[in-house]
Image 1 (cartoon, one colour):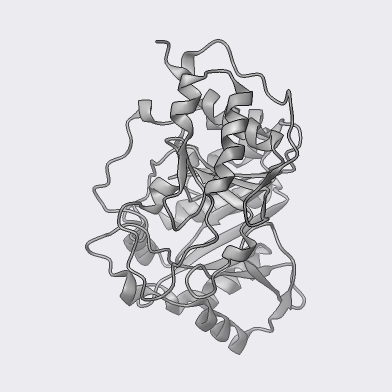
Image 2: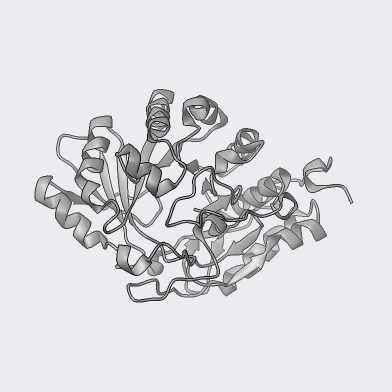
Length: 346
């Protein structure tokens, strides 16, 4: 059998668009988070163990299969796709794949989440490929602490990457900071002031309870966004806004600045009622809910029906019946041991 990346016949995209994806609770799905790889050049303590083993290459969706998935979803009314990982820029051929996805009819936004380590080299190619917005993970501004949190990361490299992204002219750049009690919660204001100085956005995120990591106690490091907001409000003027980027963040404006500060609260303020997104893992598993295992194996379907975009669209549409009403990731809930964020996809 010819390996998927070597297939010469590609699926025919965009031939029979559908009305849209609506789950059984009436929520319209317009946002896909598509993982390109489970691999990463960092080993962040809240994401994976230091000795994590990654999937074999043949278990990952090929570039053609990833493009087919993106096309099927845009045919079905999804207008925002975020490429995630792992670290998506570690996937060979990622830039060309982005160019293919960016050209899909009906797609309004192609965005990417990255750790920033390769942006000094790739920011301009990313922008030229059609990526409109970029999220960059930044959990600390202290070099030694940054190294401790990421196990392998170089803060200076990421800071150079942020500057390269600003120079490349993305429509919007946002930093993501996962706040951990006792690890980096004392940098909340420093991170906010850094974003203000750069004129870019910043979201503070509660740690997600995925994967058991022996040396990292999630119960001890949980830091709710209500406390983050209180600390910010003590030093900065926060103006609540109803602005949205299609995701779960609640945003605040700072007078006299273009910067927006966001709070993403999956544990303290459940946002399942407004869920408009699904995820596809690097191995092709369509996850209907972040905190549940309701899913569909798209890899098996793609390889059994190569090139049949109609079959793929029909399966995705039918899968909306599996999407649960919500999940509980709140404080006191035991971590979801069977799946890490690097496996889930950003």
